[in-house]
Amino acid sequence: MSNDEFKLLVRVTKKYYLLDMKQDEIAQTENISKSTVSRLLAKAKELGYVKINLDFPVLAVEALEKELKDMFNLKHIFIAESFSKDERLILSSVSDGLSRYLNTIIADGDLIGVSWGETMTYMSENLKLSPKKGVKIVQLNGGVARRNISTLSERILINFADNYNAMSYFLNVPSFVDNSEIAKTIMQDSKIKEVLDLAEAADTVIFGIGYINKHSILVRAGYFSEEDYENLRAEGFVGDICSRYIREDGSHATGELYNRVIGISLESITKKENSIGVVIGAEKAKVTLAALKGGYVNSLFTDEVTAREIVSLYKRE
Image (tube, rainbow, N blue to C red; front, side):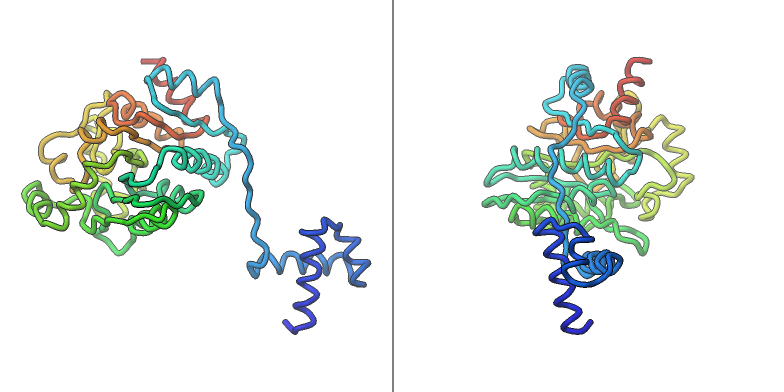
């Protein structure tokens, strides 16, 4: 692009976005066609000169929120209105609700724990900047994959830390190991123990809720095979919180399966001032209901379709 072409792009873009001129008006003043104006505006976006930031009030479903809040005695709940089936729009709405809430409860000196997963990755990338003093962000469960993929656990932690001007503490170990003796040995390492102690001491924990399916990040990361998941389902498990499996009635795994995990305990999660579960998708309603029954979630962020399915499942029981 020549210097004259760039100057034209700048003038057209500023007239459109700053002066609110219509495209045909710009075309007349610049002696160019309307199609050229449209092309230049698109080019300005493509090159990153135009960045659109939407900051609408978050639309919530108040009656449904009250019903679920009363049903499970929740501390806080946010349900995004499902005005579209587009997952990106639903993720955006839930993310807005979570970000605004976190900025009201996170204060200087707080210790915050975060898990990993696809939903948590999106949430971490769409936080609303709110720098604090002396905040610590700690990883709740190991996130090193066994296969050549990334769980993005480090990116999530970095995004949260950057948003709150916080110190970050990584748990650079697998989420699951082969047996409980290996897990016990790893957790005795002084550096690993330091991070785990911080996770157990966190005031606020934020985590996604996973359901058992062959496309799970835990399968793709190599922790489980599809056959393992079928066995878990046959044993009555419906999903996990921070890599620890729970049953439909809210009880959790015990023994070897539970003790193979390197991360925060579910018993600790139930005692947190803020145990914030983030879940999107009706297919996760059953495990979310189990999480609510088990007392692992006292603040829930979800979408309308998922929330209605949770209520429906609860009433059918």
